[in-house]
Image (tube, helix red, strand yellow):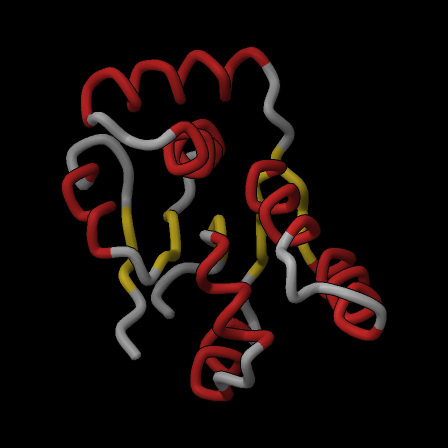
Length: 124
């Protein structure tokens, strides 16, 4: 990882929870941010229950939450209109854009946002 801070896309957290040790090693010394949208997606994930929720709670303590405030909303609207993103993807991308830090994702579709924010693609 070439950055000291990143906004994690939801898929990155899922990979971590599925035991991707190479990914965990890359993120060990990185300051982690997570969009409120990803928090919603992760806690409502149908596989998350009991022990998984406890692990998620512990992981979230390591992350700085990026709330969906007016600035993130406005950035998400602009990104969604310009790039035809889903609402969830637009909010996650806007969270990184507003913070001025890279978005770390495994979703190659975010590459098209390269002119508007730094996107780091994780390849498994």
